[in-house]
Structures are given as C-alpha cells and as structure tokens.
Length: 287
Image 1 (cartoon, one colour):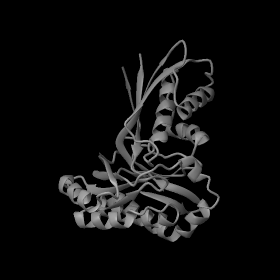
Image 2 (cartoon, helix red, strand yellow):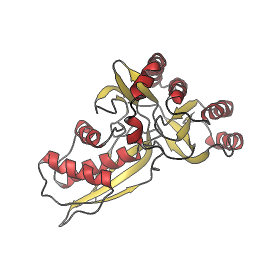
Image 3 (cartoon, one colour):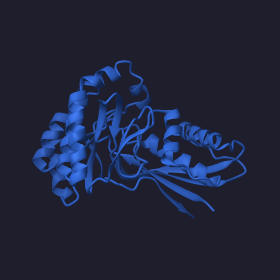
C-alpha cells in the first residue's frame, strides 16, 4: 500500500513583515500542490537535496533511521517564484515518509523539521495562519478564507529564498514597516472574520507596497493601477519572490479582468495561472 500526500503551494503571502516582536507571514495557500507518494522499499529513491534531507530528518525524528522509504515526488508549483514550492515539497515528503513508517505527523512536527532545513511557509496548516517562518510557530490561527481566486503573474527572474532570509539588514528593514504591517494585519483579520475579500485585498496591498523597500518590484505600481481599473480586489506579492497576484472574489468573472490586465501589462509581467485560495491544508490518501 502506498500513501499520497498533497501539500499546497502559495501565491506569495497575504502579509509578511515584522510586528509584536517577531517576523511573520500570513499565509496564502492555493490549490496547486506538491505530491509525495511513499512506500517502504529495499532502497530509497533519489530526491532533490532539500526533499532528501526532509526524508532523512523525518526518519531520524521517528527513530527509524534504518527504514528505506521510496518516495515519488511531483509538483505543479513553479520554482523560485515565491510560491512555496520548497515548503510544499518538504512538508509532503515529511508526512509521506512518516506514513510509510506507520506514523502520522502533526503540522507542528512538520514545521519543526521544515524550519531545520530553511525558513518555511505555513501553507500545510488548514485555513489561514499567522506563521513565524523562521521559528516555525503558529502565532495565530486566523480561520478559513472566504472563497476567492487569484490571477498570478510573474515579474521575471528568480529569488533564492534562503539567501534572501539571511540578509543582515532584513529585520531592521522590516521593522521600519511595522506600523503599516500592524494595520494590514488588523484589516486582514477583519476580512477573514467577515468574509470580505475586499478587506483582505486591502490588507495584502498595504503589505505588498511596504515590501518595496526590501525587494523592489518595478511592475507593482502599474499592476496595482491596472488591477484596480479591471475590478481586482487587491494585490498580493511574493515578499521574497517574483510573483504578483490580483485578488478576485469567487463570483468575479476572471476572463474580462485577465484581458484588461494582459492589455495593460503587456511585456511587463507574464501570466502564470488562475488559482483559488484553499483552506484544506495538507491532504492524505491511500492507494
């Protein structure tokens, strides 16, 4: 019997910055996944470096270092764009490894393993969470997102998340934005509580623009203006990546919006996908 674990990626973060004594993000999980299929075998399969380390650390955590766990890993999340591809891979591999050994990890246990490898997203938790992406702790469980979709665009290039997060000036620069980030968090919590996609979009937009002094995106200002005119509810940024997302209510017709965005933003950004915010967290099935 094999186990298949699917762990969601993200469209950047609804909010990322510093407040209340720590750096954190508010997650933006989407319905694009890394999938890890696992079974016990005579010898382990080859995996990318971070995923292989996730399997090794999970086995060590469980006290089953001698187990050979074969894992087949696939993903529909673009890499190097700020869409939590590494977190999705690592978390899926952690849980799939544990299941092959007859165990089930809690999200907190997965977070501890993931953080030992690199700063990580909290997208494998159900719903939306305020997450310490360096320490691995959930600061607040904020509940489910209202139904919403995101038009995802790429500004080009790649960002090394690990290198970005070890910048010596990063926390100091985040602290300069603390007042704006606190305001954004309040708006986001209000939006989640009331089911207002507009409030969530307003919060995400504040955070996206605050992050310009940390990781500048030339396309952000025209993207926001074009998105506002097209009927978007706000802009979501990958704070340590290259993507921008235009937030829409689930009932909005994305076709006309995309046509307007493509016309307005021609040659400045490239369309990646239309995705939906998901509240399901990690999923598991047997086959």
